[in-house]
Length: 317
Image (cartoon, rainbow, N blue to C red; front, side, top):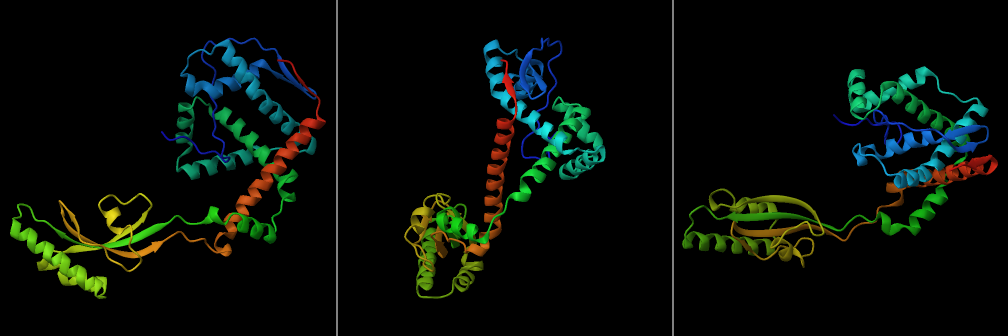
């Protein structure tokens, strides 16, 4: 069963501790007037490694390394929750209900299917509601403290675009059409020679300026030709011997006859693009989202740093 999409980009990695796991809690950290225990920390370790460890017990060395890695995030989460309480920001049960309905709609599943999917991830429905409520609280707090202060000006967008033009350049590509003269099963030398002659004749007509569609039509049917648009190809996508046949062609030119075990082919270069840089207006919305998200992330990092700097934090590990 497919995994459930959360409201945030971060994947939900909630898993219950192995049956029979025994842990003695000690103080891992003090954050203002709250305590983070080693029990809390070890639960985060289990969530992180459930999939990778496949139920195997962790060595003390690995567990201690992961404790040190995950403790800063628990401290940050605690600081965020404390700030939300101070500002009187909370999440009502109906907001969680609405978020769950959104998750169901995004995944196209019912409530029962959601619960079944959570079971496969080692998560109870109640645990899921708690995690979702925590995410919603963070969104609401960040929206109040940060997002309203972040703006992107049109000049910033233009400056960024000019400095990163090559980042927006579309990849080089070619667009081809073909006329093919397939070799019939059990062909003899005379048939091969006749088809080769027709392919060369068609080549001369194309190089003489006749429209591609007219030449294709002239050799289709009783003369055995087939073909049409081949599509668009990026660098390295066209296989030999076709890649070699078109490597030096410009737009509007046709290749020499390509001789393959399947038949004779003419490749017509409909378009050859070195990769276009789009106009500013074409990427303005994309730029705005990119820079806004970057500035929000910078603001978030500055905000959380301020929370840490102003807090009383003691690490006991």
